[in-house]
Image 1: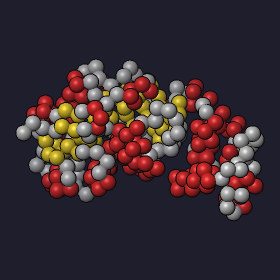
Image 2: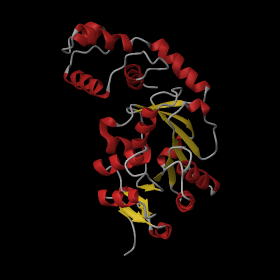
Image 3: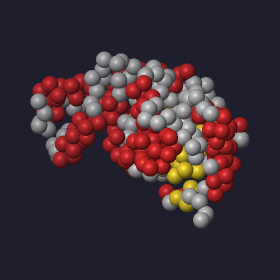
Image 4: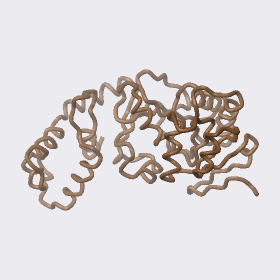
Amino acid sequence: MTAREAGFLLLTSRMGNPERRVLTTAQLRDLARRMGEQETIPADRELTWQDVAALGYGQERARLVAALLQEDDLLQQYLEAGERAGCVPLTRVSEGYPRLLRHRLGLDSPGCLWMKGDPDILSFPAVALVGSRNLEEENRDFAAAVGRYAAERGWTLVSGNARGADRTAQDACLAAGGRVISVVADELTHQRERRNLLWLSEDGFDEPFSKPRALSRNRCIHTLGQVVFVAQATLGKGGTWDGTARNLHFGWSPVLCFRDGSEAAGELEQMGAYLIDRENLMQFEPLPENQLCFFDE
C-alpha cells in the first residue's frame, strides 16, 4: 500500500469504529485542494496540526486531520484483520480503481471498495442487472436470461446479491460459466469465496447491513455496468426504483427495462429507459470504448 493510499484510508475510513470521526467527501476534496496549492508542506516528517492549520483551517479541524493521520497502528490492525478474512481495499486513489465509477460518479464515487475474490474481474466489460425481490415468473425468466446471456457473450454481470432478481441473474450467470461482481450491503466476512465471483463492499469489510448502505450501493451497481437491465420495479418505491430513477436523472448509464406491461415500466420509459423483451437480448451488443449499440432497426 502506498503512502497516499494509507493517508486516504486514515482520513476516510472508520476502520471498524463507528465513532471514528472521518472526513466527508467535500472535506477531503477541500483538503486536497489546499495542500495542492501549498508548497511548504513537509515531505520528510509527519504532518502536525500546525502544518494543517497553516493551510487556513481552524485549530479544531487541524487537530482532527493530524490525529486521523497518526493512527497508523489502527490502520495496520484493520488491514491485517481484513487480510485474514480474505478482504483487501481498493481506494479511489489506487491503481485499478474502476474507471467507470470514477468517470460517472466523480467525487461521489466510493472512497474505498473492499474486495473479496478475484480483483481481475474488475477489468472485464460488464453489464448490470437490478430488480425487485418478489418477482413475477416472466420477470424471473428475464433476469435469468440476462445472466446467461452475459456469460455467453463474455460480459461480467454486476448485481447486488439481494433475494429475487439479483440472485436469479447471478446464479444463472455463474451456472453458465460467467463472471459476477456482487456489490453487497452487509459484511464481506459473511460471503463465501467462489470461482468467477468478486464481492464488493463500500467503506469497510466488516460493516453490517443497513438500509442506507443498501441504497448507497445502488449507484455502484448502476455505474459499474455499461448498461443496466431492470427485471422488475415497483412504481415509486423500493431500492430498484430509487436507484434506477437516480440513474436516469443523472444519466449514469443507459437503462433497459423489461417490458412487462407494469405502471413502473411505463413510467421508467417516460423517464428515459428503453423497454425490451427477452428476444431483444439477442440484438443487444455493448461495445468497447463505452459506445453502445442497442438494437438493429
